[in-house]
Image (cartoon, rainbow, N blue to C red; front, side, top):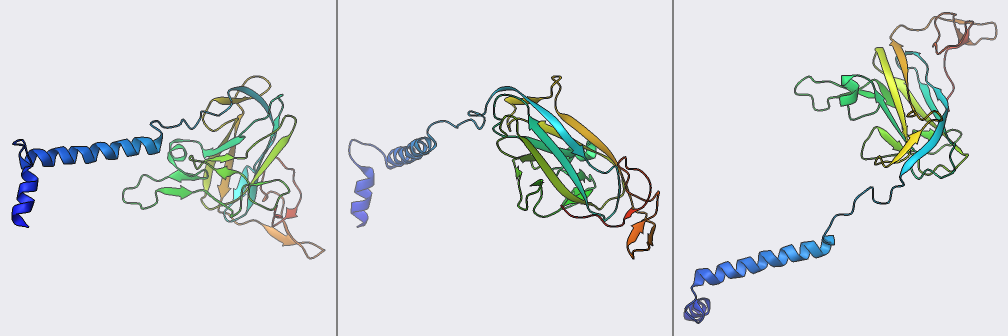
Length: 249
């Protein structure tokens, strides 16, 4: 065996063993590159290649979120968008974020970024999104698939003249004053642009005060626990008493 192996590696024509090994190695590398190119089709398909283009008109029919909230008290963010154009919107997308440097740096829609060194999870929630949300109003199953951008929710197709009303159920867990922003898009890659009737982008915000002060309540003649005037959630509602707990969606 030793003399056979040595002679086979030397080959004929005076070619050295090192030359033959280098040639064999080059062939293996070239073959691997060819296989990789064939498997990938030789090029990468653009993610936005099939996205519709142009301006698509929408109208924000409903945008509500209580402007005064309390820690651990569940509430709802509601956004209803109507397709007022003549074409279907392939991907109605809504992006939620908290305004300001800390909110914009966060990867999560209802959180802020904490720059303190050494934190394993630097995103700190201001609101906790309830499991199974967002949903479409009146529905009991989750809607609005999250995209590569975790702040953006894709609600799919919206036909002309139809309305999508999205509901987020959240619980505030961090006291303070925050500005929650929203933006409506007609696609996921920027080629299709949603516009309002006056041509402006469909965006908006809510300035929300979250307090850790417990509500002032009393028991009424019917035996119900109600909130005393002046201690309620705001949001533009009048005085009087209100139930101490809110109903679910």
